[in-house]
Amino acid sequence: MERGKTLEVRIREAKPEDYTKIKEISRRAFVHELITEIEYGSMEFQLGEYFENIKKYSTWDVGEACRKKVFLSQKIFVAEDRNGEVIGYTGIERQNTDGRADGAFWLNWTAVEPRYQGCCVGKKVILEAIRQVKALGGLTLNVKTSPFLDSAHKTYERLGFKITGRIPNYYEKGCDVIIYSLDLTSIDQEYYKKLLGKK
Image 1: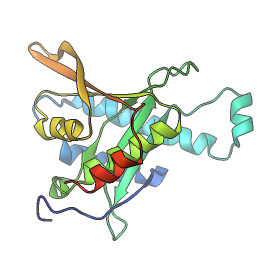
Image 2: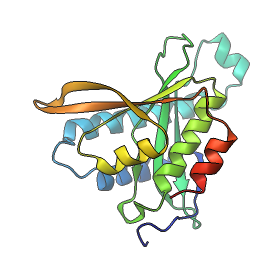
Image 3: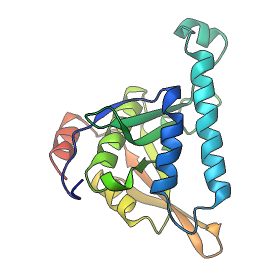
Image 4: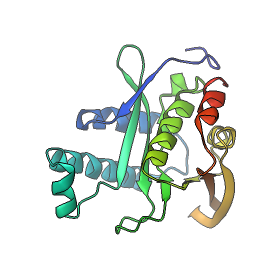
């Protein structure tokens, strides 16, 4: 795929059968010396736990889930190309998973197949995550990212995220993590129209 050319994709919520493909995309997309096997293992464990919960609770109705005080605090979304192949994903998670509704969410790992990077796939799947957080009453969306992921920084900044924090020595001594935040209170339909018309 030619870099810089916008690719038409369909965004949908992830299904358990997407798990293997998502893991494969992650391994190909995050190729850097500071992405350790421990971090891959942690990410894959979280993804596996998410899909197990989907299977466990998918037959419950909302009333039953509320009675049992169960809330799936995470959602994962995938981007499919026109052939139905999963080529990217992202996820959202409530910042507080203990039932407190303070309107804060995290954007989790976001990855796109390397051959489709630069084709607006990441932007589109993150925009869907923003829509979903807004629908859930979210007020802010935060994301942690590495200082060496320049393309991710550019994507977040184009979408209106601002740097709001930094955690020193997060990955290793001398390698911090950067926190971006997006204020969702002023986002409206014009925001989506403007960004979907821009590369």
